[in-house]
Image 1 (cartoon, rainbow, N blue to C red):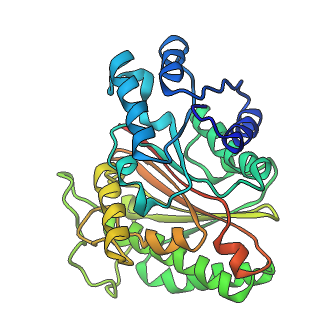
Image 2 (image 1 turned 30 degrees about the vertical axis):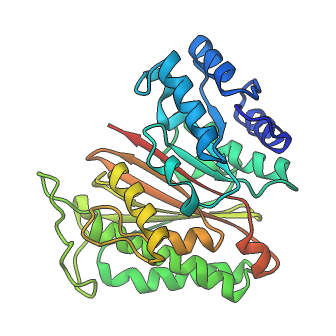
Image 3 (image 1 turned 90 degrees about the vertical axis):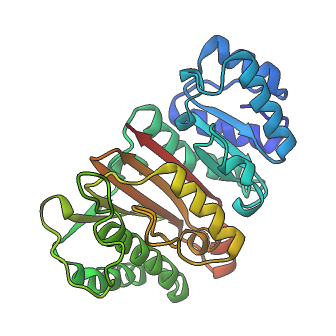
Length: 319
C-alpha cells in the first residue's frame, strides 16, 4: 500500500486479510517502488488522489523497474482516489491503470475492505470468471441463458422482480435493472465480431431479432448474499478492448453522455450513469474467448445511501 492516509491503510488491511495476503504500507512512492522491485507483490494499492502523486509513482516505476515490466502488471495495480473518474483522466490514460477505487470508505473502511477483498482474492487466485468467486461460499447463483435478443425485456423485468422480492426500493431496483439492460444490449449487439475482429451488428437496429446460437450465446447470472447483489453478463467473443473502453469512459464523463458509441465493439455500456448511481464494475475479458462484465450494488435503506455507497471499477484482461 503506497499511501500516507490512515483510511487507505485501514482499508488495505481488511483487503489483505480477506485475500489471505500480508500488508506492507509505504507513505513514500520511491520507497514503495523499491519494495515492489525487490519483493514483486501480488497486489499494489496506490494513492492516486492527485496527478502529482500519480506522476511521482510513475517516475519511480520508470526509474527502478520500467513501465512495461512484468513486475508492474496493470491487472494487479489498484488506484485509490476521492475524486471521481471524470477528474482523474491521468489514471485512466495511464499504461499502469487496472483498477479504480473511489475513496468513499472513510467511515466504513472495514466493510468496504472486506467487500473489495473478495475481488482481490479472486484476482490473486486467477478466478476472474464466475460470479460465485466474488461472494461468500454458499451464496446461491442463478443463471439464465438467452437464445434470442427479443428475450432481453423479459430478462430485465425478471431482474427487477427479483430485486423487489428481495425488498430493494422500487427506484433502486429500476437503476439496477437499467444497468442490466445495458449489459445485455452490449453482449448481444456490441460484443459480436467476425474472424477479423470487425463488429457484426454495430449498425444493426437494436430492435432487430437475432438468434443467440453457438458463439453468439449470452448468459446472465445473479447472486445476492443479503447485503450485496452481483449481476454478470457473459458473451463468448472476448472482444472488449481495454484502450477503447477506457477512452470511452473518459469521453462519457467529459461530455456527460449516457452511452458509449455502439460502433466500439464490446463497449456499449451506459457506464457513467450506472457508476454515478452507486454501481461498481468488474470487467474480465480473455481475448477471442469470452467477456464477463459484472455490476455490483449494496442493498441500501434509501436512495441517498445507495448513491453514495463504496464503489470501484476493475479490469482484468487476458491475452
